[in-house]
Image (tube, rainbow, N blue to C red; front, side, top):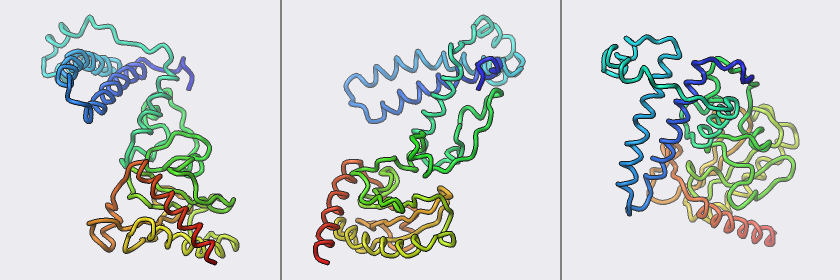
Length: 285
């Protein structure tokens, strides 16, 4: 985006969204913060930030062409009281709008879960008049190019490292916020959609690959079942999930809707066990 193409409405939206991001980040951290001094810090934060957020909302409405009647309706103050309260407030302006928009895209994407906005490469920038759409992208392909992605897409180096990367397939642990410890994600190197697009080498190797890993996953996790499924809904790129059913969770198809989650350290520990089980299996052949 060209800095000169940012409209007043764009700049006001940037300012408002930066305020919301900073407040959201502070509140996110506070959710699991130690109690000592927390109440005092939160009260001070809200006393400072809520008025600033309100001012940025008013600036956003005004820069988009909204009248004081509209501001009065939004704030519940009425037009005259809204003008008296906010009329002298100068809207904040970021010195580098391009960098600020990119930072908001990255922040949102990094913290996004499974909400619909994760389908957008530029979830904030797309709202701006200055925005130029980028080319569609595949989460799995760009993951290995270093692009920031939502947590459900995983990371270029999964917890514990890849168990296999042979130039045809990658096998590593799935994203920890959404899958139980021991879940493996098999990804094709080549970009293609589904089973009908497998080439001869991929067709020959995928079955052997699944057979090779299911046993070690079951052994490392103690799971009575390892669910194998592949739908390509999250990314139009061939991948297969191996998901151990662990603990007191419903069996059958309902399990896949909410299979559990784990910490990175738990995933790393189980990956080490899977790796050891693989080595033992290879030695026994």
